Amino acid sequence: MAREYYSIPEAAAILGISRIAVFKKVKKGQLEALRFGRNWAVPAHALNVSPSPAPAPRPVPLPKKKEAEAKPPLLSDSELDSMGWD
Image 1 (cartoon, rainbow, N blue to C red):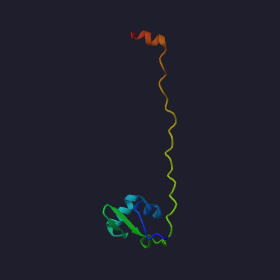
Image 2: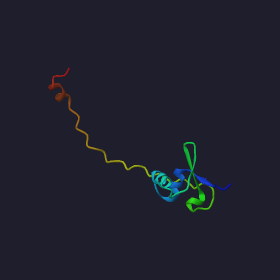
Image 3: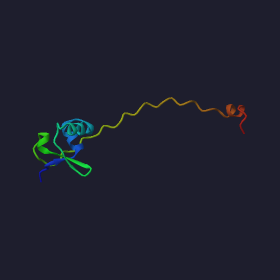
Image 4: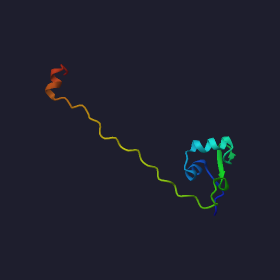
């Protein structure tokens, strides 16, 4: 079954821009879209793509892990005793 409409996130992925950029284009009249309640649908012809099955979702890159931050050294028992704690 061919797709005639795409959601805003799908349209953003097809165009290679952010969802916010798609909303801005719709608001400025640069991109045709229909509103259904709170949802928007972008016609396939407005994206210059032929109606086809849903595109495969793009993999989202995971954030890079920061190198382990230096932790302060633990205090020895004798250092804790010298602080006057029981």
